[in-house]
Length: 293
Image (cartoon, rainbow, N blue to C red; front, side, top):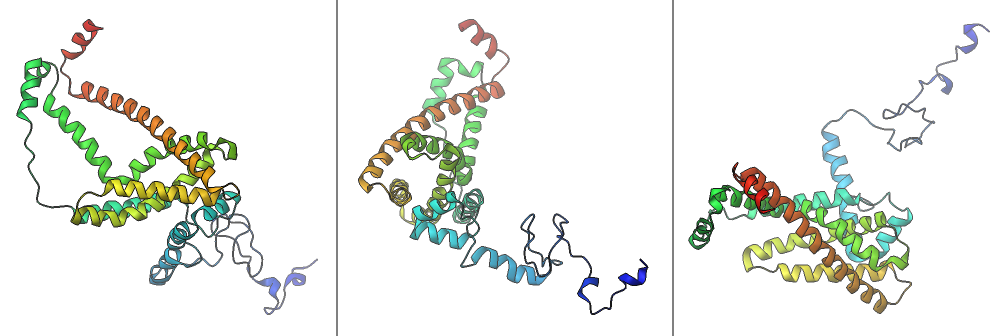
C-alpha cells in the first residue's frame, strides 16, 4: 500500500494525534476523562493561577469529597463512613493518614500562634540539685544536660501532637483488635479505623486548644469526649450487634489499650533514658555501671 492510502482528510478523526496519559504514558480513548491505567485526569495542563484559585480549594472543600467532606461524614455518620471505606468505597474520602497529618499540623500551627510569648523562667529545684549532688550522680552524668534532653523530648512531642497520636495509634488499634476479635477485622483495618477516629478527635482538639488557652486545662474533658466519640462510632460500625454489647466490648478494649500503652511508654522511657545517659554520661559512668552489674 502507498502512503496516499493513509493520507486522510483533516476532518477525519483518524488523523487526530494519539492522546496518552501524562502520568503513565498509557494510550487514552477518545473523550476519556480519567486514565484507565493509573486513574489520573486526562485534562492536565500547565500550572497557572487558575489551578491555585480553583483546583486546590476544590480538592479540599469539595462537598462530594475532600477533607471537609470526610470530617463532616465522621461527625454525622462516622461508623457507616468507616464501614464503607473498609468495604471499598474510598474515592470520595480523604486518605486517613493525610487526614491525621493535616489536622495535626493545623493543631500545631494554632498552638504556636496562641503560645504565650512571655517566656516564664522556671527555676530549677534547688532541693533536687542538692539531692543529686549528695548522691554523687554529678560525678558521672551531666545532670543539667540530661534534664534539658528530657525537656526537649517532652516539648517536641507536645508541639507535634499528630506525631504523638500516630505513635500511640498502633497500641490503641491492637487493643481494639483483641477486644473485637470476633468481628473479623484484621489489624491493618483497625489501624485505618483509628486513623479516621484520630482525625475526628484532632478536629475536636482544635476547639480545646482555644478553651485551654483562655479558660484553663480541660484535657480530661477532651479525652472523655474522644472516647465517647469512639464508642458512638463503633456502635454504628457494628450496628448489626446491640449497642450494649459494643459498649462493653469498647470498655474492655480501652482497658487493653491502656494496659499495652503503659508497657509501651515504660519501654520507650527506658530506651530514651538509656540514650540520654549514653549521650550525657561521663567516661566514668560505664565502668561504675559495669562494676555494679
